[in-house]
Length: 278
Length: 278
Image (cartoon, rainbow over the protein chains, first blue to last red):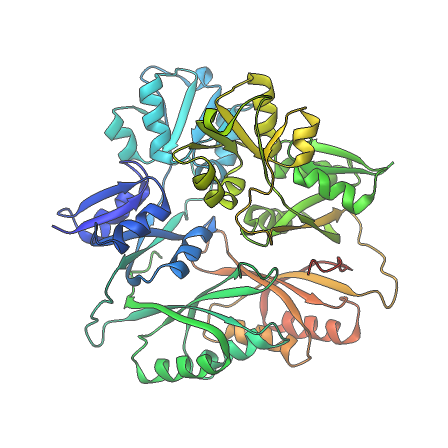
């Protein structure tokens, strides 16, 4: 049985991503932190990890980009999950009873306008995890508090959903990458994506020249993200995704060309594209 | 007297930035949320706002980029603050007494290795604000808990510093922008920076063509950041800073050129550059 590590408690969106990617026969292995998720796969304790890297509203999960750089794992796949937050409370609790909402800061952010409309003046309290906020509610039996989390978390802890679809914007998707100790074998002709990370000398036009290696070969970029290069304030690492496999002739030439300019270049993986969400 | 809104409690790093930028005679006005900071200036209640947009370790403060886009304020300046976190506890508390550390999630992240080394197995609890964690500690008088915050917050709440410089990486700086309802008048010859936001059609090479308008005129980019375009999953807004003033002939031509290609283009402001931190 495949074992797949994820960050969070049972009922987390990451657990949903594990099932969506591997199907029902996978064994999801919850971990307290993203660091622990990486360690579990690096050490061989789990076969794979499923890791959120980008939310369509909140942007990139920066910590995970930094961890990708620090560990020698390969991206072997991606999966996109529709995120819908529910207001969850103890049985019988009404909106008027609620003084406080618990959730992960990103869920609180994504539901900000709904919270203000439904629960004016309520206190927002950040906790470590969306599903964890439901677990705490069930354990502490607080009738003045609600949690924001998945319907899966509500069902697991046996608590009712007071309001569904709390997110301010319904186009709320999270993209997860699947990590493994060995690269994936891709069937020829399968539409692929490649993720790389690179740094260039801090000189005018250096990012432009780096992007030229893709633009001049009509390689389509699907994402670019800059991250501070640790130890060098205001210098950047660029995380870039493009369509194609690193072994495709044109992509291989682009990467060779980039390697000439870059001070750092690492290919994180080539893997089959997820189905589009649109 | 100039009034300047900032997010957080007294002792927040943002309050430090207010004093660093305006000098000792400013009146800093604390606000509970970033949204409230924007409102306070838009409504005329405060003259200016000081807002964190980027940390040299943690990356951009995405929410504030989104808020810049939603409000019609001008960036009129920038200021860079060295962030140094202190482990703060009640008088007489020793490391061995501590079971729990409170702080903002970003401070907890930045001190992760120090916490693990000094306080193995301690629980990390996210609270809404670094200075707020010290306020809570002073109010609740908990001897099993420490907070991570500025020396300024420790002094304000009269609590001792158990360990200084808790951040894992000493190159920890936060860049703040100063916002106003009216653009700044810049003295000719003063080194300036301009911040813009734009979107392009999602087509191969579109970012490359956008960057060409700067590269081909030798305009130096100091930062590029992509943000999801709300309502259009996996399409992006680009936030870009370049050296020069929007009224400099070469910069004005570059912006005209970009306007031809862009689906959205807004100049957030031209303003004098902060002194470099290096």
